[in-house]
Image (cartoon, rainbow, N blue to C red):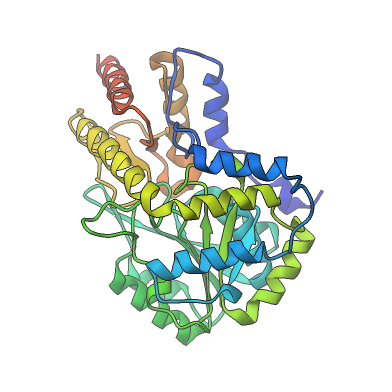
Length: 386
């Protein structure tokens, strides 16, 4: 086995979840998904497709009708683009891996803004690239980007800048001015940007339909690849369907890589995606409103607990917080499962930069469930203070 693979860390989120899965008394908020099932209009479309016998291979880049629908969907949120800039993938994580395969390899330098979902930094490492971690800074509980540090880290030697915003786990979201500065700098250095924007619709600023995207300011030929997914915005985590927005000149290469990775996304899953897009305008605003209620239920209650530091996230589905005196997040998360029946993700799962923090996924069908979780955390904190 290659040493790069052998050295990949195991999932610390899974390590915590394995300690509590199967226990009916545990309130689980450790995984990054809603506890609501996929809506029926998505499920029904897949069932109908299977019943029609659509169980064969499709085009590498995706069904033309889905690529066209994704182009329309994206163009409604951002400047217009054509379907030739769309590639359908078997999940958002596959989209990210395929983009990285196209752009970086052994000996290349990839700069990643962290903390971040660990798969993103593992992907270039698997390919033999050198990963330089650029930490966000914490100021009064809020995670922020140091643009000067980014400019110092991203040089002409940097092949790819990897950036996830709205961010998992912190909820940090890029501002338009930050995006403009980053894009201008990467144009000067010749660096590709891989932007993981899968949480762009889960954005809570008033009157906004999506978080700021690099697509809003980039030219079609810029060295920019944006990864997207159906998982979060349409409650389709188990379906494994994503897409890339990329320069047209890169599309043929991405098609080749899809062939060598998965051949294509299943047709019946793509039909489900088509139905999701057809209902996007009626479904997503309601989902965002429900998540906002969850956020506004959870975060103030966390902030009121003694020793807790937390900031209201502008986007995503996570509250990221720390409890004073609890610096080993994995041990603390396991303790909360064992003694309080509360399942959270340890910050260390997202990198050393997040050690001492915990991630709470607030995507719940019942906000009262979040309150019960806070009550359990409060009792655990009180017990530790005695």
